[in-house]
Length: 360
Image (tube, rainbow, N blue to C red; front, side, top):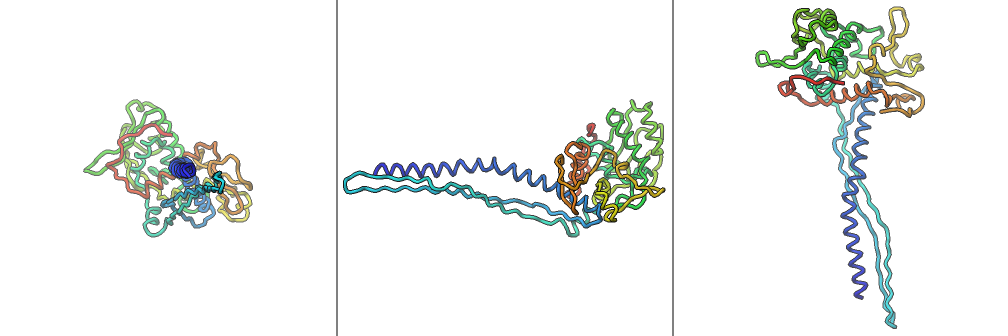
């Protein structure tokens, strides 16, 4: 019986050590899966709502609030012994069953109600551009999303709501922000916050080396700015400011989503059936919204599931997706996620950095 006793002790040790080793290994196998699942479904939900806006359908967000997962380790082993009358002992050890059962509990919280609606309807503070530019985002991308007007230059303001029927006004704005991007890449401009009477204000500054640059002269001309000044306050307001200020009209978060939804290219049959608004030129021909979006954002559609997609969703009998090799669209998509996160929280202007690095 001593041998049997030792065997039972050994089995018990194996059970205990098996349980302790499975715990850490389960983290390696499940944590990355949960992380990827949440990241991918968040992107799918955002894309789904952009497509819904294109079709003038109601949007809805559902947040994964938290996940509680428990692991149960089951191992069944058996041992038996018999001692016949002649004194020869017989021992039997059975392996039984081994299993690890995961029981996740996922808590969802709908994003609705008065607080969420106010966050979506409230305009973004222009100063938030400093925070994002310092994180590496380009001024062209930021201004295209955040502002619907800069010193009288229109950035498709009619696209802030449902898809308009007629071609928007955008060309001069688009030209101005592309010049600004060129100046930014060549490190001829800077932007930051200044304190005036205890209040933080956004300021655009041209460096001395930009004085004789033709892009500087063209940008100032487009915005009606003083040709001799290099520091310009950026304030919220309609139309053109004076020669030393730049008036901007920010979009709300829902306005940004509506604007980006114009980058969704629906199937031709949905346009023909009137399921989406057909925007037209003055001569009656269809207007291509990619002229407004440029390379910043495009959501393609297909009848079959796309193979080369960074994110894809199925909606109204079609697949909508952002191509995995469309780095510009992926960057803009990522920026929108950051804007939504910032709008949901509260960022104090005094906590923002003063200058920024050259962005993407």
